[in-house]
Image 1 (spheres, one colour):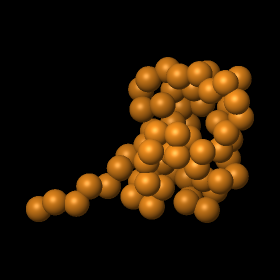
Image 2 (tube, rainbow, N blue to C red; image 1 turned 120 degrees about the vertical axis):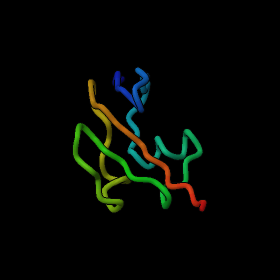
Image 3 (cartoon, one colour; image 1 turned 90 degrees about the horizontal axis):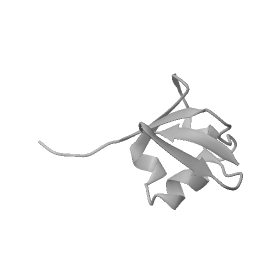
Image 4 (cartoon, rainbow, N blue to C red; image 1 turned 90 degrees about the vertical axis):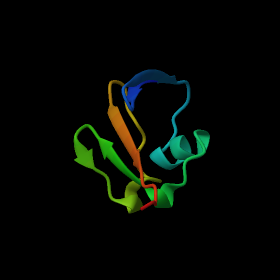
Amino acid sequence: MAKIQLNGRKIILKQKMSILDLLKRYKINEKKVAIELNGQILPKGKYRLIKPKNKDKIEIVQFIGGG
């Protein structure tokens, strides 16, 4: 179990999951986001490998088109 902060909200992850699993859980398209983990931007290739740990801070920014 991990208590993390996701976009300013505290949540509890009851099972180990990757950043990619977290995106799928919240139905977020991984191709249209930038993710910051504890102040560092994550390369897209690491979404599947990195698993949030207790007290991690994750910010997910979605890209939206418009004009």
